[in-house]
Amino acid sequence: METVKDSSMATEIDDSVLQDLYNWVDQIPLSRPKKNLARDFSDGVMCAEVVKHFFPRYVEIHNYAPASSLENKMTNWRLLNRKVFKKLSFELNDDVIRAIATCKAWTIERVLLMLRTKIDRAVYDQQRAKENVMHHMGSDKPEADQNTGNAKGGGGSPYLKQPAKRRTSDPKGPSMKTTVHNVGGASSADVVPRMVFEEKEQECLAKEETIQILQAKIRRLEHLIHLKDVRIDDLQQKMEHLRPTGGRR
Image (cartoon, rainbow, N blue to C red; front, side):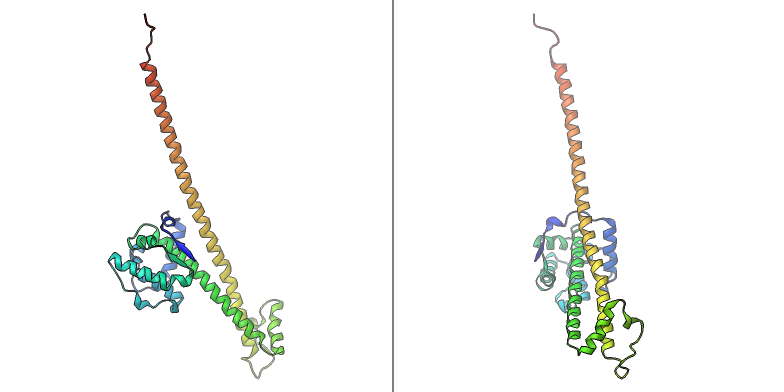
């Protein structure tokens, strides 16, 4: 299980990534109007609502009461840690929880970015599990029905373009099952590239941010070296002035 620590939350986030995150949050119905992300999510209630929107069975929303004190905010987040985040294969370090509760800059944004990735992964896994069940159900049909279902694999989706002409006495039989199975496969083809793309995009952005931070440190060090060189030159000039110009007599 992944443990998120405070040290990974401090760096700034690219504007395009932030805008994409805000758009994602805006699409989720929440109980309170969105004003300031750090303050809105500081007590954990809206985060619980985000997860419940995608996984209603994961969250018992009545367990999370709006809070203004630091202690009560952290209590909500710790409950999310134990009851919800573990189901998504991650947990927040206590330092991260305190940083969220005190509205530390960039912390909730990075937590929500990671939560979004975890939610996408869980949605994808559930979709794959449903497809596997449907596949096994299809394999248990009579041989004639299996051949009908396999006919679509040769290219295209005939059951999405035109109705089946055979078995008119039972139009809701194998053709309906085959159509549903094909639709499930199409949605998974849409989900996988987008999810993988978002994960890779976040990794690239994180690396770019790290590079920018390192470059800033390099520029700072170069500036310090320049200042030291100037200081050394200044001291050398002073030493030259202090040296006696004539010999002793």
